[in-house]
Length: 412
Image 1 (cartoon, one colour):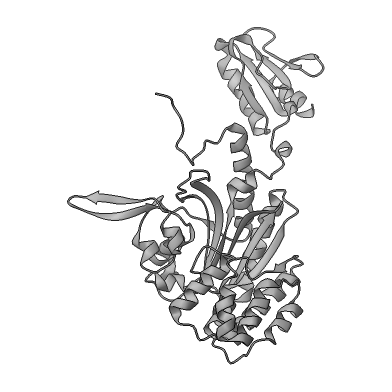
Image 2: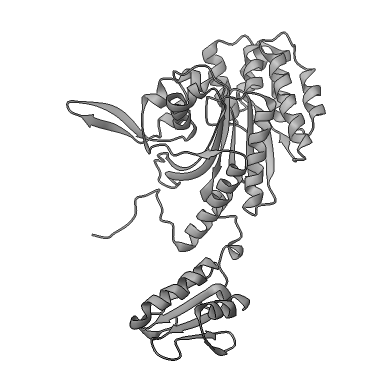
């Protein structure tokens, strides 16, 4: 039988893992600098965690890996987690809700989404952050800054930031006189880019519907744009004024931070639990991450009503964009070490010193110099005990002790 990997799943070879770890490390270092603590949630979660609260779209729920986790004669249906935020919110409810302080959580995890054709990745890795227990514009700005700073640390300097606001779109839809079910359906269609929804809405309430169409088809780059847009709507519509005020406050802080951005109300899609600001990040025309505010999610899952927001960055997409040249340790920092068995203790001492100096030390097998190294070190029981050859110049030095050898290699 021919061996092959499962369709839609992939291996990560050595070069790909180098890229992966680079993205992961850059995010974790940035998150720590912002005061976020790393957590990890299980791969398996109960299905009802994603269905009882209506937290995922029906389209997403059709694509989850779901099966019975048998326990005796009965079983609970579980899923390979299709989303990272919902498990983090569960962890908060179970362990952190009674602490009385905002929870800053970060993670690196995989999620699973079924694709019938098998042409897309079914396992997706992401790093992300959740700020639970803080609902102000500064909290929104903190998350946006954290995401952007993470990209910069990864070496991705050219990216675009697109901002939207789910609460504002919902407020406009509620002003159209639609039922809750109709609002729900229209919201998902709009975020999925289905502009045919405008035809029916315009016929019902021409003024508001036309303003909504303008809002969704126009993009702006300033608070002034948002304030001009606000003037097109009737503030008497439910939640309209507070939604505009909230979004403007967040935009003002983004501007104050010196971040370039674009207001694009169609920038958020895929999840139903967003209630406030939404942002998406693009690099080389690829969506590399995003997130937003989900103030109702914790309450919908059975916890106390809690303000919350978060984001995810897609490691597989970011890994393809990082500069691979800066990730490799240069040949000059790679040492081939040939140790005579009777001199193993002395050889290990030399290797330990070099590794502490951040050199890569490879064992030379059968007397053959390890590949891609800049130095060849030989350790013998007799005299000379220590010698080092610069493989770039061919020059060999006899060393009196391990520190002298380390000095020669360190100075290059």
